[in-house]
Image (cartoon, rainbow, N blue to C red; front, side):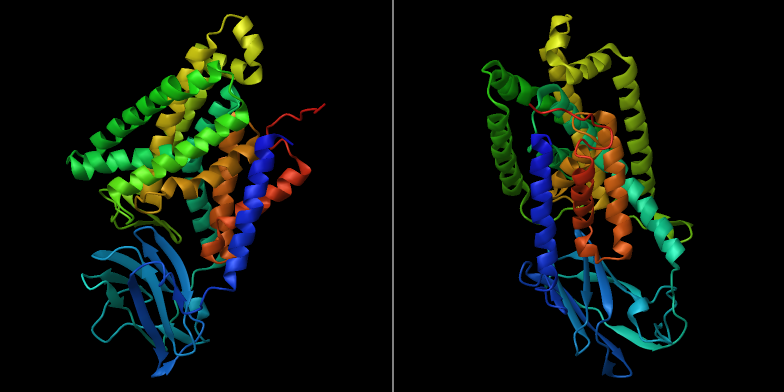
Length: 434
């Protein structure tokens, strides 16, 4: 099994067991209250009597947490920001038979089990639910499955934008770039700077951010990676350098934008009902279209242009490609530029998907990138695309059976199982060692 596959399998195992070990240690009624100073709390009662083990999901501003009420019907969730609005959704499937969330006498909301919670300057807000006999709003399993598949495809396509880039870098240089997650963050941060900071429209801020992302890729290769390659620095040493670069960039982001979650323009758009239980905002739909268009354009570039063919030749055999007259350094430079630009675009789309920009958002994205690349086949861009879509589907569909807090552990467990039977990945080629 290649070195990267071993590394990813080890990290995936450790993360998966960390997630699983934390399930029993978290309190059923309070989550992240020791992590964040602001909180949303509430009560769930039926005719003045508390209801225990009722599930509620709190989402928004980078938060996607499920909590259950305690024996007193109380719950609390820590959130990273005040002066922000979060969505609190009570899962009616966890209510007793024949009981549902009903509106107050003067309310007309069609979804009384979903409420907006605005955390004001005081940093705390209480959300209570009125429970009684009524018609329960239940989404069928088929509708839930379709909704998860749609969300999984959206997440997988977004993941693929960054995965194909990191796969190209690995294929042409042999480097497992642990700083690629920070390029994801960089694209989102630059979009924030030029949209909210400078005041440019979002349709201008995003292209500028992508150009800057590509430029950073050029600078990194010209100033760091190419000199190290010329010194014939080993792959392990290069990987350690990338880890150091990742840490430096990550805490630089924290220094400049702080530790809170910040929203891009348009992140608060209301979703539009499409079909069944599937709903998306305009920006969500635009994100899907952009992902598909860019991936198709990238595939055409890789298959039919001279640089694309040279890139594939170097990935197959760098020495033979150099002997045949291909300028390896030039092609690798272009690969770094394209890889960084794709990562920046993935960062912008991920900021709308989370939603929100945070200084360490790339770090939480990175292991899934490696999982997608390893699952699809090391060094193969099309394998990374397939692996990313598979990972995205597993992440979202798995929430039908496991808590949402564990959804990132599910694809890692699947990755471990697949590597046991096909260590070269889906499209990878089996290599003989020795």
